[in-house]
Length: 249
Image 1: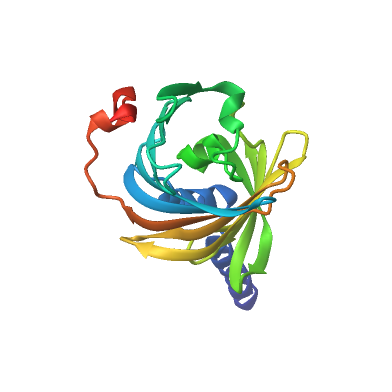
Image 2: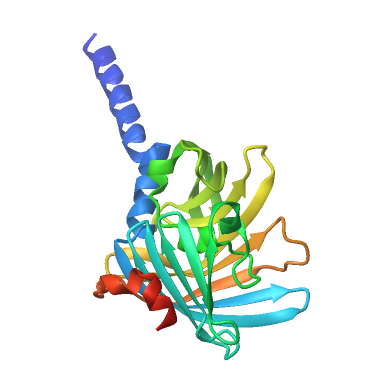
């Protein structure tokens, strides 16, 4: 009898260890949010856009604060230099200097338009919401990707105002970054794919260094590389940065 009791105890202990080692979907999203969501940051980035007409690069400096505020200033090439973008809540304003010197409001479905002819939309480039706030998650299994052990997680939107109704992620089990992602419409139609091909350690978090995006609805697109040349999570940002007046300075 004592032997049977001991065996049952070992079985329950083993099941407990297995359960403790395998996170549920929401646990995985929390770990991704710790890495990807920022309170504030200033970054220098390069977009390399591969299109039917050739390849071109666009450099920018971006200020981000919370989920609702972002400011982008394009710095290179010369023909794009001086163009700016401001996000406040669910509205975006684009500033185009010479020859028009005008501010254009972008809202509603226009937020899903391409930025600079790239595979990224205005929503993609300014998104900073926690995945745990907007998606339910289910762990579907494990796979190897880029030589890394990954959890495969499927996400379904909790809210109506999300850009992508569902997503499928391959999440690095050690660094908690989504190395590959497929994004879908409510109908199940695939809309976009992305991959993180290089990561970096910044302070106490893992963060993407180089990503590639592919807009599956854009004919002729051969993908866009998005490179974070530098990022600072501790820099002070004045509130005046996130104003329409800053667009014309």
